[in-house]
Image (cartoon, rainbow, N blue to C red; front, side, top):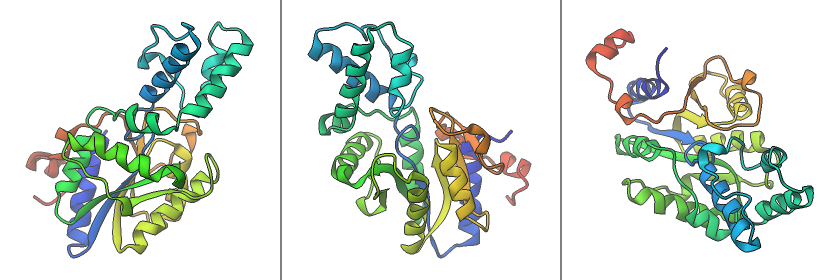
Length: 259
């Protein structure tokens, strides 16, 4: 099976040939797609221990976290803690997960994600857009955090290429994702691909893209919607392999492309 980064590289070349005079864009979700939110979750849980003089999360690592930021209650259900304390942790998390200090300092990218984005931004007339379920109220913190992380990798995210949810946390997310794709098209950008961890978002964009031209890439990390609704034409992966973007002549021949 073709790796998802190989598929992205091939799609980019095809679109460059098909639309040589147009500006291209690859659109990414942020949370659990570019950023590994397990680091944020760990940071907030550790802050609960510090502020309440407890040790519930002492020794916890990112590998022990298997839920997304909207499912902390599920994680608490599996821990031996008094029910009252579990409720306190859930409330603490809701109050602090998207606070300015956490957004700016506790987020970490998946290995290789920024390298892939740098490669895309280095291609002629190619841009990277962000289409996130985060709300407009944290736009400033979001772009500052991403550019702080990206600076070390030679990556710069543009505010005008960041589309955010206008409805509220967790509200009408799939609708917002489609609006985001339409927004990029209205800027005169030809969408090469869309990368998201949530199957329901990929399904919504697949329905929006009647021509079937947008490559759908499923970031197989942490997600809450049904994996069974991932569109059949989507390609799934979890490793951002920069080497896979430089496809050799032999690989192009294997893929049936002109040399």
